[in-house]
Length: 217
Image 1 (cartoon, one colour):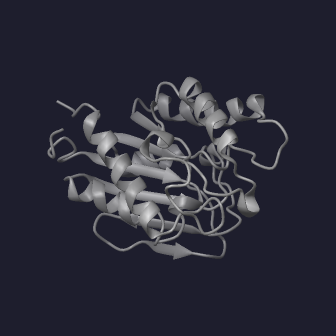
Image 2 (cartoon, one colour):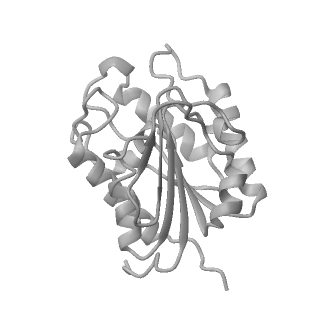
């Protein structure tokens, strides 16, 4: 793949808790995209679901935001999402990258709630599509133990299968193809240790570089 594939592109990355702590994915993914020449704006809100990004919605465990080469700024109190259309109007991105999967997984529920999940996903994809902005959707990676969130690899497979079929017009990126089950260690069954986040960030950036959004004429 060309290392210049993302050169000059403006990328907006939004997501849940994986992007809401400076040492999590908002570090290595943002770095990788920047190093490949993109102008990157990343925002993560802990606990935020897909539809929470259509209007300002409170986050229950903090928010982090990072623009360009600046370090990520973490807010613990009063955190909320910024509506996706406002973010797009401000950042004018070539593409939006949505990293949301674990908050859709409903890991402690006996069955995966497909109807609810569809409402969540379609609400956000519709809002992005209405702006005419290209988009990518990154699904959840493997767990290495259920932990306190109850995340199992069986449910991860179900969530990825669902998202792969229901995130159009976004291009789907399946994180389970990036590692073997249990390869990326976690601190709690859901959030990875540093090496896992670095590997995930690199793999997502490579997936984007292999299939970049079209540059505006």
